[in-house]
Amino acid sequence: MSELKKVFDSEKFFRNSVVGILLLRLLLNAVLPLMDKTEARYAEIARLMYETNNWITPQIDYGVPFWAKPPLNTWLSALSMNIFGVNEFAVRFPAFLLSVLVVFLLCKLVKDKRKSFFVIAFVMFTLPQFLLHAGVVSTDTSLLMSITLVMVAFWKQINSTVKIYGGICSLWGWDLVCWQKDLSLLSLLHLLFLFGYYCSGSSKIC
Image (cartoon, one colour):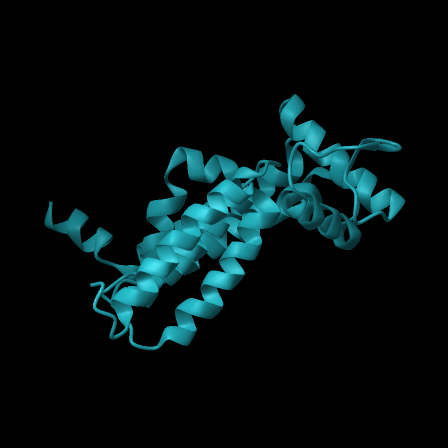
């Protein structure tokens, strides 16, 4: 038992595990075909954006606009295709990067600074659903990153006297959510940041 505890207390274990998991995820992103009709649909929308060079209007077919989802995820996948070419790896790569960014954002909330990025990444990437969406073409990962960004900014805002940090991050988060979901969600997040603004300052509300 003591030997096992030493293993889990070792940063080397978490570092090697996370590197292995990430490399495996990247390999699977490259070799696995698009898995279902939803992933194929979003990938095709991104491919059409890349092919037609129309970065304003997502299209489900040539000349047929697709307004069911906001364009953030499509922009990222099309941009990735512009760099890596038209293939499964390229269209899934933004989801992978956004998943890593979520882990970096979560690191901002850890009180114990001895806990490294690799410990948090190990916890997150061993969650089956999180690992799955690090290699799936969908709007879920970009939405998760947007909401995580807003919530981290909210927490920083109510625990800090420096209001500019929360203000800048909240505006950035709002913009991302606007491009990812609808205005009703934006309104809820707006209320959170109004609360955080007053609680972090000298207002008598809190």
